[in-house]
Image 1 (cartoon, one colour):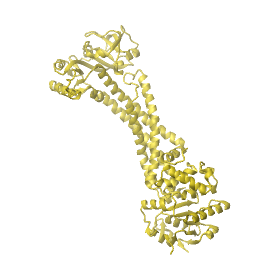
Image 2 (cartoon, chains in turn orange, blue; image 1 turned 90 degrees about the vertical axis):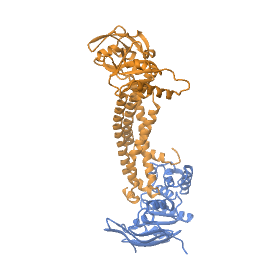
Image 3 (spheres, rainbow over the protein chains, first blue to last red; image 1 turned 180 degrees about the vertical axis):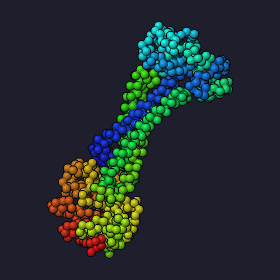
Image 4 (tube, one colour; image 1 turned 45 degrees about the vertical axis):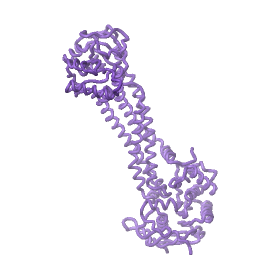
Length: 377
Length: 221
């Protein structure tokens, strides 16, 4: 117990005095922050895995239609891309979500057998797929959840596909995915001659040209050669593709509602605290505290609630992320690595939420007439 | 010539849209070092007068002047006046139950530019002066009524005020503690040269004061 009285200590003693209410309020804000960490962490993890996939395969640029989810890019444009001076390799691909069994759906890629993207995958069982054959490769995570090994079969849209290999990928998005020959994916979707995107690996940048400048020049070159298509750097594509944006919007929306409930909880607690301590606030004013000092005390209590609830919520949210990273249904899109920026953001939001929730009660407390407030006791 | 520090001029206070007149024009001069007792029956306006003199409330009419300058009704001026010049002692002690004795005495000093060590040191010195150095770590509910009132007096002295205003300071105490509290107040006043204004029902206190006024129906009788 410190001998010197400070604002934080004073605030702490007030919160400790009403332990049950403080605990319930903490639980409320922890739910909000936990939802934020869990959901936004989930969507960011998704984006991170996407980027990891591009990085591990050495993809610099994705060439896509304006609308990501449509598989409407002409496969023939691949030849035009390859002819450009900055382009080293081009991999046409189809991306889709596919129901592989009644219970398991997974990201499914259509790649050509000679795609450079196979370079980053390590085949742990069986072999690489071949063009023109009804076969597929499974990421080891997906193979585990489907209990499939090379030689087993899967029925996809009425066609029998043989599992030809199981691979280990650098990204959870690959580890939980299936890869089919591009032509087979086109056949399944009646999309002959169409692809979702071209993944492009650039030639090394000239020594006298900064990498950013080189990347921008390559983008311009591609877009000039293929009007109507967009050349998007891999990092931007990872963070801003429609699936990630949708997941992020859903995460923010849901966690905002949870946060709002937490904020209302703190506001209610602080309003009650100010009401119950009307006499005390009157005394503080009688002892020479100005209104701003009263506001400061109430706001420190509210921010303290936000901070402590935030820490609790971070722990809950992170635990939820770890669980999601182990569940077969979600393991393919979530990694359990801890994100310090997310932690800092969650802490900041929690403190801000506390301060916001404390504003009205603090101001009401500060506006009390000292003599009226003293009479309240 | 006496040094008048506090004046009331035509002081009025009404409530309930003027239907209830608590003070009906009070004129009063209080000099530095005065020991003034304000007596009168319940509801006569004694406490209202004390609150107005202490800047806790604003008058409906008339003025309170501190060293010739009107206090007015601006909250920042009144806050400054209370923080720098006035100490309050209340009948109900009004100690904060979550804070220790030592911390309670430091509360008024948080409105002054002092660091934590200086606040704590001054609070210890004040408590020692009032014979409470043995209970600095205790909470108010662990003290007797007399001890609580002495803690409240120590707190009132925290910012070294020139004016100590006490509203029925012995109202909640038995006779022995009342006597002791009065002794403490008068002794402190002498030692520090403070001005002491006490609102009281008790004849003993009124007789101990150098001067007393009687309030009756909102006026000095």
